[in-house]
Length: 319
Image (spheres, rainbow, N blue to C red):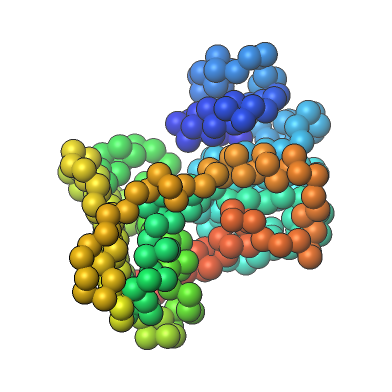
């Protein structure tokens, strides 16, 4: 469901498995045609998820529509007995997120969320590095992108559709942070900026305090001139970090106990992307009931991010 740019990425990943893509769904006829051209044999095309689900042609669905529509489409899919891989950040309301996880468990259906960064080598290296330099005392994160220039005329600039830079791109960084700092968030301070005529954030700063004493400062810049991603870890036994710019080599390192820096090789830490993990889980034939162990991309693991984003948006100072 959803045949835009993100939908095409999922299509390519699924075709690499390979799986039979039997249907595509999007209200945009041009997007449907572009997607159909990538798939052989040609899939059935639907303009609404209701028609798709009523046709009963699919065992599983990938939901990559605007964030604000995820909850209704995921629920409809689960109620139709269809396994679901949902694009991050899952849904926009914590209560909806918890209800959908419960529904999937009750129906014995897979419900995964595509937090792709969890599979990436640099993120997984940082988990390893944190175990060497921790306990962590401070984490600094910057995520910058010309997001507004790319999406200024799309649904991402409308809050009712689940727009905003924090929810769209910041959620992945918050997800990484929550996995690096294994402790509940005890305090939230946030300052968010929305441009004239818009009702979503494009820029902001967030400070989080964790129950174990760790502090984190995050900077989100959706109107930057280039894409930059930076994560810095400061621990009682050393430091570690990741820094990436568009036109420069990445810097990935760990420096334990004040010794020499050790460069990280992200390639050796990579694991299955969400689409591949979703397909592997379905092919295993195992149960997805209440007693099933959580997968890496299990929607239950996305609940803390949904709750934290909601908390930040509700308590932030807006300007």
